[in-house]
Image (cartoon, rainbow, N blue to C red; front, side, top):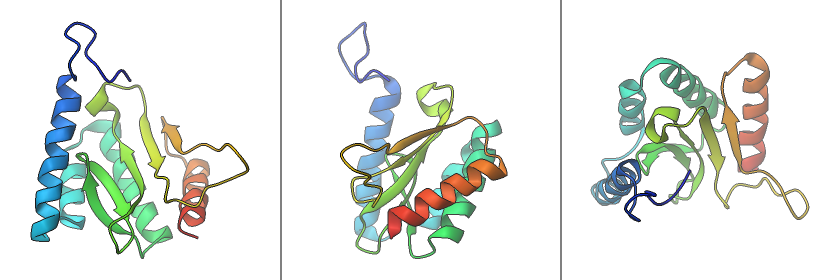
Length: 143
């Protein structure tokens, strides 16, 4: 994903919208209006396989790490500690015109393995095998 629009040297429309979403989220956090209802509304607005994957990821993350609190982060579903630190998040393919959903982990997630490890995963389909992998990653991330 390019951070700049190749033609104008500015942020793309999708990136500008993500930044606007983040500003709204920060304001909502101050008002204590962010949380599961915001995440569920975002998921409800998704279409097709993005929505299917998002619904399953949401349920899986909540079941695996019930202490994490759902919230939106740059307009996408995220899951944070009680002090607001995001542990994991996902981005749908439609938002950035990608060919896959992305599950990511922040630097506060405990995924460290030596000197290099992955923190972002592409998901094209969420089968029981992938669900097991996601559950293991989330469990490790919050350990």
